[in-house]
Length: 317
Image (cartoon, rainbow, N blue to C red; front, side, top):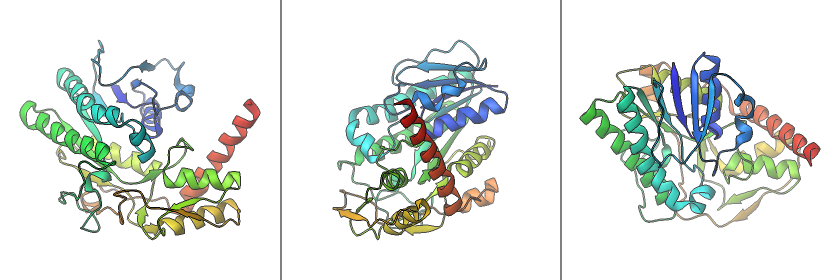
């Protein structure tokens, strides 16, 4: 089994590399490292079934070997990242998706597109079903990511219908866990980093906006089940259904970290969604999947990883 994973040095991509190596596969990990980190795959670099290809996915991808699965996870994925790389974000969703679908077509491989709950925008329907078309500002600052993923979904379905590529689309809701970058701007790594540094965490707006957070191990399990479900070509939501306000999340992280800090507030970013929670009926019914790891359990594990990572950096410096 040969697997190509784009964005393979990123938070989710590197965990998929680990999974497929454990399963005995040969893994081609492609990443240009603009947001991925070599540290995430350092332990795999000398593995005989692992090959790291440093390349932009928008350039022609050449792999001589057979490929059984193509997993397209390349993209800046946080508001900080796609604000810093707006053109690259649009290109990886369009040209990168086109290139990877071309590989899947040529190799007769199963194709998995990493889409996102961001395609729902600031939703007017709650919770969000896959049938909901979204409420997206296409020219707002978040539009570069939202529209890149919406285009990627459309192109993936076109390849399935026109070329009979065996495609899957996963709409990933907020996911967290080890290997998140401390400075990627998302809530959990930001709150944990602030807590460990003794700095009051920043909450945008009044913090009443809600999110639901899925631990990385649960997400990986759901995606693997999706890959092995040949009849599921249309998008499938994967995420946790338990909502929490952002300000309550900040206080929970501070409590778990043992840091009695207050929070500070800044203005809410443009087009920031007020609510975000998946309807996972499709995944529960057809994949027999739902998250098992509680937010508190997942946060404790993530917090420990950030603590150890910080200690290693202190020793190295």
